[in-house]
Image 1 (cartoon, helix red, strand yellow):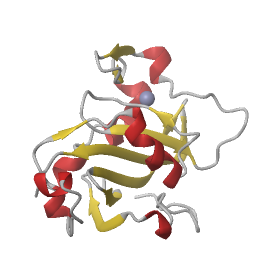
Image 2 (cartoon, rainbow, N blue to C red; image 1 turned 180 degrees about the horizontal axis):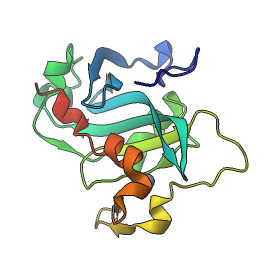
Image 3 (cartoon, rainbow, N blue to C red; image 1 turned 60 degrees about the vertical axis):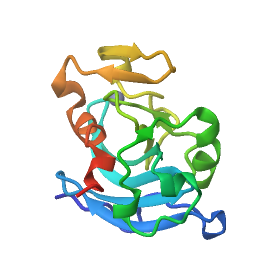
Image 4 (cartoon, rainbow, N blue to C red; image 1 turned 120 degrees about the horizontal axis):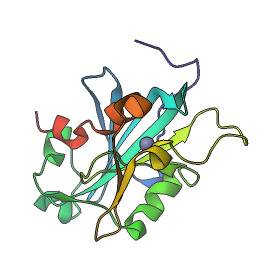
Length: 179
Ligand SMILES: [Zn+2]
């Protein structure tokens, strides 16, 4: 397993922004995903080494979905990852993500979804350079599906082109919390 360079950590919100931290879960790819919530919004934050236009680059991957679990809907502070495991969830709207993006420093992140799930995925190169392409190459090489609610995702036609990123993104992130 590749270790991130010293000093590089998953994105986290400032303490004054009043997010609740729930610990982390480790996915099948051995990447730790740090779980945060604020009201019904559930966020998984990780650091991944993944392909970007043919190069392995460290990237922040932060995903958000809305948990419709009754407790979270009432604004209760959810105390453990188990409690945020409501089966009902939905995609967050752009308005719901405004604050999330600000708090996690994702204003320049690229939304890149590789499956039609509820989580909206945001990627940001840790060592972004002005000469980098803006978007993941999947948007040029794969079939892009736009759903009625505007949610856009790429259907992998060429698994090799986007493998590492797709693998990271297609993890059933919230599903891990149900265990
Ligand atoms: Zn992509």
